[in-house]
Image (cartoon, rainbow, N blue to C red):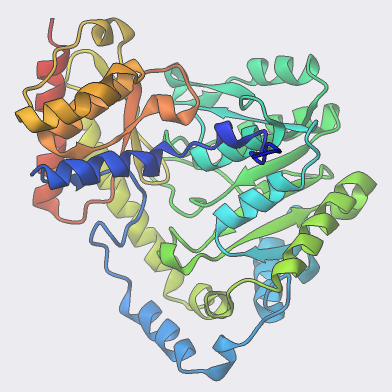
Length: 431
């Protein structure tokens, strides 16, 4: 074309969690029975939605008002309900005007970074969740800027690393955290959150906290919401119903904005997000209308507690099996529903390939030849066993390994997955 129409940040848009599915689908055509452990969809992995939640949603689907537009920022009654929940926790108080609804957090993330000034950077954790890291990198046109999560300290943020990078790079305007964390399953204690907020306060930054898994905490993990520690620092919490109900296909997420009017520049940025949302008119109505009915139901807290207990058992089960394999390390998750398997770099230099069917081996030869070391292992694991995992190199880190989920609802099948992984890794990494 006579003009280059490709966006400068286009080469930063990577989502390994979904990209590996294309390879898996091709292997299915070649006869491989694939077990998809790549994406955090509880429903696809067999979780049944609680009947009382289904009844609420079914009732709303029968109500004509669910088919109408709602306010640009979101249904007012729902925003009032959520603001009341925030205020009951203590800490920063908000009103309904401090909430903005989007069609899922992916939409929220895209909008936040699309309308952030290109020269303003947001530093995030490494390993990083791909949606956030790719969106931040794409908005700037450069690689995502990160601070380290330390596997030697249960994936806690290296606060010295964070502060040094903030101090010596004045392009950093915000700090991103994910709590509980995806992909590591780490849960940040309140004191850690306070220290991150304090760094933001001292260097005049804003904070973004992805709280998608805020109510999926277990195995002794203790934390709090950003609203409880943000003080007078400008901040944004990202929330969603996708993993809690769970209703990932509902595409319903929202931003909780803290201290908007304490900083004129931050206030203008938030208004820009609202103005951009007005161009879309509004987000989907029905999922928003369900929130006060579901989250306000006395059965909701026991529902969350029951699910957290299930993931706690599955995490212990997996760690007990996998940590017996020489050459790998798994920290016990305390939140969300993911497991990060770290591979010893020395073991990865001389790993042995598993036998694959000839046609599968032929198909994977080319992608394996140009892949990162841990991705090569993930491809071989997929081709030989059908287990579709996500290489850790796809999460903006140099640490080799992969991520799996704790979502398989069939107990027998889930145990088979863990034992297959353990046996396969033992064969691949044995000296």
